[in-house]
Length: 390
Image (cartoon, rainbow, N blue to C red; front, side):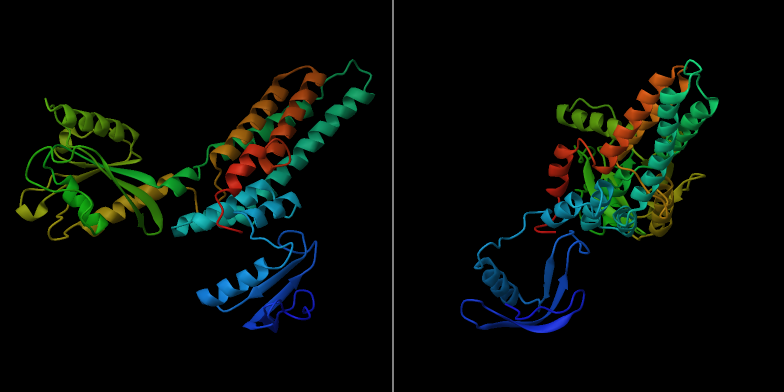
């Protein structure tokens, strides 16, 4: 299609022609990457063609007519990079998150993983773990003093376990991906739905003067200063004989309990206890006295909205990983948790052989963490998230 290929890792302009008809398809940049120094570790040729749909379709059709060529499956290029050792599982997870990132915070966290931030940290842990294991195995094989346990081994295991626990205490990446849940709660007709619509900039919730209009919760994903939040409107909290409304009220109470940040519209004195509570004096345009500690807001005039959003964004940020830190996902945290537990068991035993076995268990968890062992089901689910061919 391109005639002669350019030199390795050098871009060159080539005419792309249909192999069957020799008709001109496009004039494009062609790049060549030889194994193993390529994205997948295999020989790769890349066409950088013009982006018109007809051009792309014609080139894909010509490629598809060549024997032995087929379109890549979703995630196949990244799967091959993983299989060929170009990336580990944590970097693949970071790339998957990067493809799905919708906010600046999500992009930065995903990029840190994709660029190998966690992989490099894991390598440091593995080096320490291998040194501990080597000391234990050497003592078992060569020490004659009834396998006496060196206190340095126990303290080394305890120190590494403590470091892993410190990483486990950090905010997780799920809040970055799913959004910090900001729940708007209060009694009926407090102005909750109007406030949600004003923040969202569109009519997402039905607003009437009839108490109990909102029967179920409404979720609005937003970004506040690059921070993802899930703004949640809830049914008014009150006792009711209406069966449907009562279900909505029950769900509202559950959402209040599960809120990351709670925005309360109503009497400040009866606000639920919450570590991140924002009291809002709604309908401020009506001229009523503003209670001390409440933010006066009007969904009609926009008064106080910027101050409220600033406060919500600041509270949400306290729950998220720092932008310069690595955030663990559930799978990664689970394996680090198991490795930490194994190291704690190793530190607490007085039997050298048992200690060595606990260290082997910790090494096995790190292998699962990086994808070296026991992760076939994880791989299928992960690479299925990728866009076609990535």
